[in-house]
Image (cartoon, rainbow, N blue to C red; front, side, top):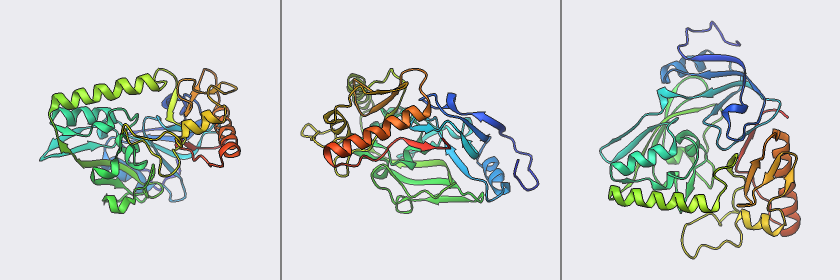
Length: 307
């Protein structure tokens, strides 16, 4: 391991760890190293002693990720049980970066706080912050009070929304920094009403999205200014799915990859797809949408590693 005087870490460090089974799309090669820290101090100690030239890639549950077939050089950091707690205190929701978005939404609702927009977002709080996740017109940026992160040098930093410079599906989290915990504010609500609201959101999602297929969520971002608001008058004219459909690509296949028949902005592994199949189909879609409409779709799914 490329470290100076390797410390006695308490987590798990694995060499040449396959990542395919750790992603929702079930594709991709190995990481040179996978580190699963026991807690924040363990993570800080590890990063402090890791040679500075070694790349670090923080990974959640792989819900919005294509790992390319050649795998990832450097160290993948994957947070586990030491980072998935959820607490409600003094009107704030505190969540570890490995906590699932849906668990945070449910725990908040039980305490009478409305973070229901998180209920249908796949993935973890760390990924939600990194991508400024949102739906129904609410985004992480609207609710974040502060986030804690361990820097690439192993130091603890506390970040505000201003520090993270949130934009549509993006933030300014520096390369190699690992989010560990965050605090959110939310409007008060009746727990039963919030639970009913989430059930309605789930039903709407399941009716329109291929939730039983192997996907990574929305493949492309909506063109700027046309994100989902959840309002009845929400225009679909320039949504990514509509541009893909208008280009004749609903259900289009390439190898084991397919654009969903149910929702054409969802990229599927129909069984046996490689990461190259998935990425190549995505690039084909981008090219044909560009030719048909002039719009340049931007990937929402994160693609990492070597082909």
